[in-house]
Length: 510
Ligand SMILES: Nc1ncnc2c1ncn2[C@@H]1O[C@H](COP(=O)(O)OP(=O)(O)OP(=O)(O)O)[C@@H](O)[C@H]1O
Ligand SMILES: [Mg+2]
Image (cartoon, rainbow, N blue to C red; front, side):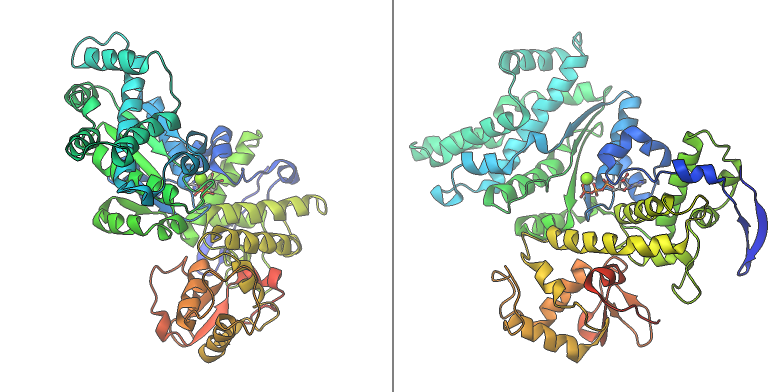
């Protein structure tokens, strides 16, 4: 079905592939979320980055990344492999926590000397230890030596009769703390009671037994999607920063007990208490980042897997490099349209997040199916799918920042039909007009009025809307490409290509 022929591409010989037209009907880039991808073979086409390796070995336990960057993918693959190796895996997701419920249930911080973060950290530790012991007791029912019996007895006596759900278990402990902290209780007694609760007295004496059991069994706890339902409330913040502290503490118990949590970048930026902790435990934080090469690898793996799954002989695809795989599926744009063929064109319209590229590729492929019967997909299909993709991304990016910068979409809209490139002075002027309300925006009262231009430029660069030219005549760089950039010294800015179609911005020439 494939017909390799050697051609020259620049200096490097590259196998040019011609794929059977039948592959067009069945080609599939997978779903845009890891939760659905995992049952469709994610493990087989997973890109094993050094970040994954560091998480797998437990060197890193806090996974940080933007939306769609692959946090859940790492957790899902890790869970699957740990289970296959016989570990107990506990996955906690939004069904297990609800910020709304926490808010409605817990007394406010100013109702007493509450110190919520510490209380949540204690409650999380309690919850994690109980869940771990329950998991061990379930499988190791007949454990009688090495501490198993004590754990089993505790689980049976304290958690056997009433089967509290995960959130209820956490809240029950918080309620105990709350009662002592803000209830009518004599001061001396209060200190003693609090001490007992903070030290997790109920389970403290079981920890040596747990360590013993962990010598021969492994438990992995994964807490993902903490941003779902995020309401920026006091309880939500204490919930997440408390979990961070609990993670660090529980992970010190035994190498065979690993607690991982994932954090969206904006969530982290929204919780000042976390910032301090994360600085202190920077060595535990893994930040997910992608490069053009690794994104190309991700798509090439999906092309090969999908053709193989549908029964095609993919030997030539297996042999061909990632670039050749791509070119067999997507034709290049006309000369001068992109710096690096159709891959360059598409990746330049992403913030280097896998979900973006998967979506863009899938949409172009869908469009092509109705119009052609052969591969590669013509550039016109990419072009036609761009507006929908771009409009969706613009909305989604603004939505990602809704708690920090509400109304960001109306600020993006201000760039509509402007030239794509701004000299610093022009951009500053625009920012001033925004900050003083000369250019009206919607829903931005909480953060935009009187904002310094430099501040606003930083926000727009961090969010992905703007790219910056760090050196004269150099490439424009976004926050997805460089971690830090001295924005104050940048003289020219450009709206990122991903937003062009949706904001009606005319393409740049170089
Ligand atoms: N290392 C990888 N190898 C292969 N595919 C990946 C990898 N990382 C992410 N993906 C794919 O990218 C898409 C987005 O990933 P994922 O759902 O894990 O993002 P996320 O960071 O959890 O996003 P969100 O913040 O919305 O939960 C999914 O289709 C996923 O399968
Ligand atoms: Mg996810």
